Amino acid sequence: MFDIGLSEILIVAIVALVVLGPERLPKAARLAGFWVRKARAQWYTVKAELESEMADEELKSSLKASMADLQQTLNAHQQSLQQEMQAIDSDIQQTINTQKESLKNDLQALDADLAAQSDAKANDADTAHDPENARQP
Image (cartoon, rainbow, N blue to C red; front, side, top):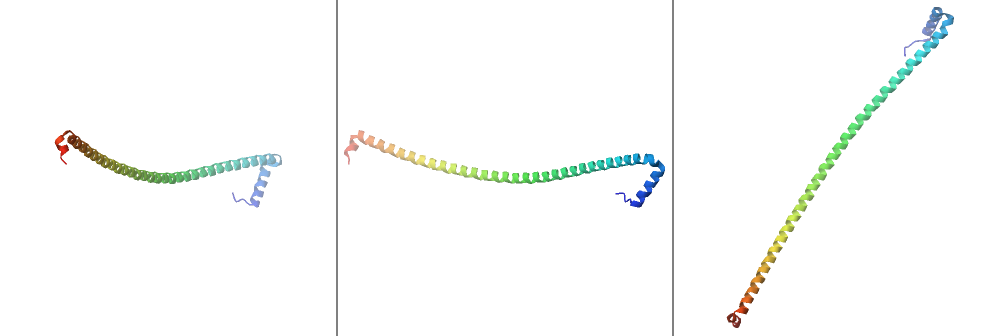
């Protein structure tokens, strides 16, 4: 990390021994070790948080991409269903119109038959009441 070799560590240890003395050196070493451990723990915590946030961001972007793809798929299916519904509606409307025309034609034919039968009955009734027409063969 700091690129310190064994010779530099020995020089620092000798200077510390001369400056602090043999009585305070173990206490200072423990204190230095404590602060180094605390700094490492803090570094690992920050590193873990950064990695976690990066993973969260990747997950969010992945979810956004998935949601966009899903939305496009849903829109395509919705358009397809709407087109099918319009085609079915058109077919139903056409069938209804042809059935109406058929029923209208059938009713007109029935009306014509009924009118013809009424006319025939009326003629028969007229000939039955008119004795002159009844005698003529």
